[in-house]
Image (cartoon, rainbow, N blue to C red):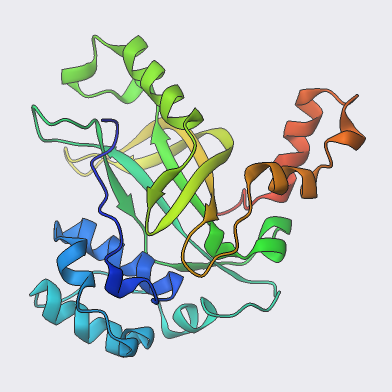
Length: 249
């Protein structure tokens, strides 16, 4: 298993908004709590930020919560209006420190936040259908995997090309990958180190409260296939980059 299993949304949360589903999953992952247990207590008052925060404090049984979205971000996450700002969902795959575990990565999600730059995919389908994850490449492998770079790369390719990654109640498919470097703080002496990897953009093709949109429909809307059959693949890929939220971190 490449990524630690992410629990599916409980029945009680099927009517929850995308922002509540995302933030509840994020906090459960961060506190290593069961989404099935926490989400079973879902109530409509979770749709307000203060109500959601109070419920999470009680359900997670913690004295304080990590960073939550601002009220502005929380309220904008429900808006279906096209504007200059968008609420985005980002995260990363981090190597799972547990030795002998069945998975290589654990999923870490960032709080909802605003991205000033708009993009065509957001304006057409909404930012809540997009998720960007940073995936480290083979140069950052932990000691337990340093002698298996080829196997690791093969597993990454397999994960990228397998459709229908199910979590947060939605089915997600990868539609764009971009190589990238990022700086992170090392646990030793709090120094920054450069990590090389990939920004992986996923699109929710179906799920609760979402009309089904396949990747074929997504691509054909943005870059009509029949009209561009004579174009090179490199040209198509460059055009695709222009349509997504490449500036978001």
